[in-house]
Length: 215
Image 1 (cartoon, rainbow, N blue to C red):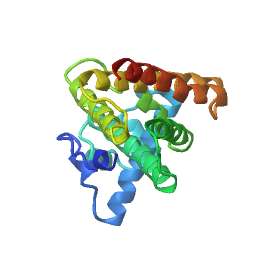
Image 2: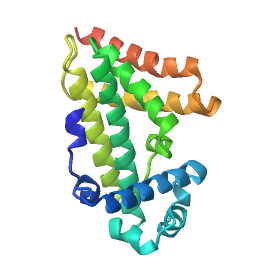
Image 3: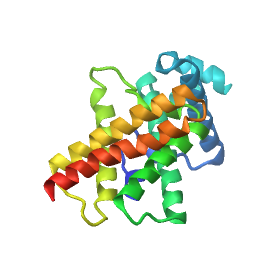
Image 4: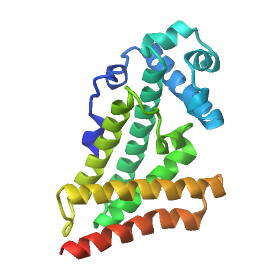
């Protein structure tokens, strides 16, 4: 998962090469968090560069300095929030290393729930951030990279298969878990405990069934 944090998307160089001056870093962080708050309140539709500038209490030119348009802003926020979630997962793995692929997957689910509770706008990463169109490939590039990172993580453990079919199963499991997490947090602002547990156990059962079928 560490490698995932170092991916450099062609359209996200500003985030991947963060400003070195403290004041610029603070401005970028302020923009990203303001955007996250707007997403929490009104979804992606409420995000405009003008509204973000207003919420962040800064000139719109400052927003444009980091993000040339709304698409770049949405992708930038997505990258920021996913990176924060991965950092939460890595910290958890450092404190309590997973000894099975099931434990590793469960840690990822628990980390996404922690991110949802603590990172403004994080819930938006569980939805398509861009409509179908010319920019869809930029979103698909990111989701594909995350799936590959999860596949690589699980492959470290004994008994885990490889290949395109396995990657497809992992991708389905990730989406299944996200759907169940959405339901859990719709039912309870802190996440319904039973549904959150099932957001891990149901995908794990799905993956286990596939592993049993190929072994």
